[in-house]
Amino acid sequence: MRVTRKSAGRAAATALVLMLGLTPAACGAGSQGGDATGGGGGSRVEVFTWWAAGSEKAGLDALVGVFQEQHPDIEFVNGAVAGGAGSAAKDLLQTRLQAQDPPDTFQAHAGAELQDYIDAAQIEDVSALYEEFGLTDAFPPDLVERLTSQDGAIYSIPSNIHRANVLWANPAVLEEAGLDPAAEYADLDAFVADLEKLDKAGVTPLSVATTWTQVHLLETVLLADLGPEAYSGLWDGSTDWASPEVTTALEHFETLMSFTNDDRDGLDWPEATQQVIDGTAAFNVMGDWAVAAFEEQDKQLGTDFVAVPSPGTDGTFDFLADSFTMPVGAENPEGTEAWLETVGSLEGQVAFNKAKGSIPARTDADPAEFSEYQQGAIDSFGQDTIVSSLAHGAAAPVATLNAVSDATSKFTTGASDLPTFQDELAAATAS
Image (cartoon, rainbow, N blue to C red):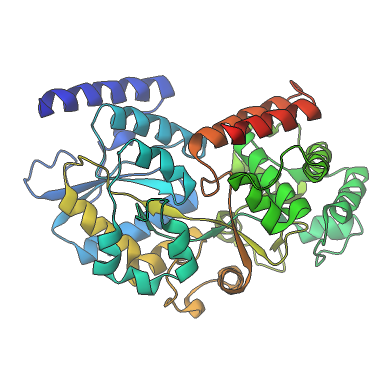
C-alpha cells in the first residue's frame, strides 16, 4: 500500500511540475553529495525549499556545507523549486502532502503559516528536539514563545530572522532630486512629500513588483499608521478593519502605489530592487534579504545604498523567520533530525545567514562575523517592539494571506475601489 501511495504522489507531483513549467529535477531529482535515488543504500534527506537562486541559494549552499561536515554519512537531496516567491514550491508541496508523499523536511515560514499543516496533521511536534539540541536556551524567550503553537507544541526550527520593514534607497538619486539621503521618515505624509518631488524630477519614486511585494508594502503601511499594538490586533481580532484608522492607512497605500513603476506586475522582488541599484528608482520597501542583492554587486551601505526602517515604523521590528519541519510519514526521519540539528546549530546559522543577509535566531552568534547592516539588525531585534509579518506567514494562516493577496491584486489593478478593498480585507481576516 505504501508503494502505491508513493507512486501516485510522485505522478501527481510530476504532473504539477509540468503545469508549472518546471523540470522534475527541480523537485529533488538533483542532489548534492550523492545519487538522488539513494541507490547506495545510505541514509538521505530530501530538503524541500524555494531557495533556487541568488542569495537564497547561496545561503542554502552554505548550510549544506555545514551539514555535510556535521553529518558526512547522510546524503543531501536538493528539493528546491523556483518561482513566485515560494508559491510554485508551496503548490507542489501541497500536492505531495495530500498524496502522502512528503519530503523529509520542508521550508515554511514560522508562525501562523504552519497552522494549516498542524490542523491537517501533516507535521510533527519537534519540541523534544529543542531540548535535545539546546535550542530553548540558544533562542531568545520571546522567539520561542512566537514559535509555540496554540496547543503548546513547537513544529519547526528556524534557520534565521528577517526584518520586513526596511526602506532601501539610492542616495545619488535622492541627492540629484534635492533630497537628504540620510533622512528617516517619521510618518507616511513626510515620505509622500518626497515621493512627489522625485516624481517631478522624472525618476520612479518607489519600485514594487508582483502582488506579494504589494502586500508586503501594505503591511508596512498598516504598521506605520496603526502602530505595533493595533497592527497586531488586525490578526487577533482586537482591531476593527472598518475603523477610520485603517481607512487612512489604505488611503496612504493607494497614494504610495500611485508613485510606483508601471511594469510592477511583471516583476519579482529582485527586479524591483535592481531598479534602486541601477538608479532608475529611488526607493523600495523590501525585507532585508535585499541587502545581499546590493552587496553582491559591490555596493556599500551608506555610500551606494541606504537602509532604514520603513516610514513610520522606527522602533518596530516586523519579523519573519524561515524554518524547517518534520513531516508526518517522511521516509527518512533520522535524516530529518540531522538536518534540523544543523539548521539550529551555531555553525549552521552563522554560515547560512552570512550568505543570505538575515540574522541568526540564536543569541550566541558573534555580531562581528556579520555585515554592517546585519549588525544593526541584530541590535534592533534585541531592543525593538516585535510584530509578525503578514506577507511572509508569521501573522496569519495561508488562507487569510491568500484572500488578502487576492483583494490587494484587485485593488492595485483597478478592479475594485477603496471601500470594497477595505471590506474584502475585513472578510479575509474574519474567515
